[in-house]
Length: 282
Image (cartoon, rainbow, N blue to C red):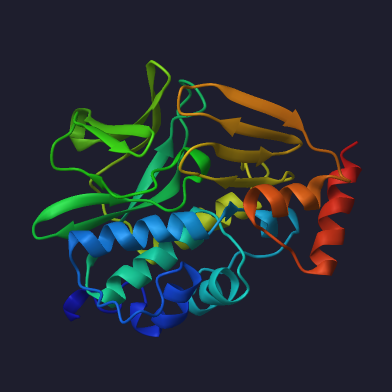
């Protein structure tokens, strides 16, 4: 694996268990570090593993060593947020033989205000061509890799359309077409980030009182058609034409919504605590 072998701890990942978790296990499939495999793994990962930050709400530390992530997202069949999701994806891709680098991004979905770098993304190079890979941006994120070689080109992913545009100083911005309007999702720089950098960002996101993840339920999933997000007490269903449907979710509905809309089932004790926290917000 050369100098990339240990960066994302891919050598420690149970690759067979991960592939089974995302529905690519068995069948004698040979995984090579090529574009076809990159698409298959990325798409399967985003389909199978839900974006969620429930451990933050439960007051638990979010561990980023690969065995802890594997235990939670693979074996316990939980979801995770960007640092967990993309660290797991990076380890798997690295194990297969891809060249993977990390980058930090600024969320641009919250208007014109300048936000800190708190989002983790990956760039995977295949035969000299870079691809943006991101399994951790929730319901608006890409389901498949996005080519970075030709900024401005529109990229269709089923019913959803993305593009990457370039700004000054090599800043790249991922955009999503919502109805007739392009919306910036996030911007990232050429500077490489390492797992240790994500540890610092993770500490802010999971503990700082100004973090968006503190004190509320956040669970999201980028479906092929309708995309779903539960943030606080509001469930949003986003359609490719830009329409969104919203409904309130009370404490008595929470567990059913997590299961029905996101395929997420919590252990009994955790489920009871989530309902208690949700009800305390009344």
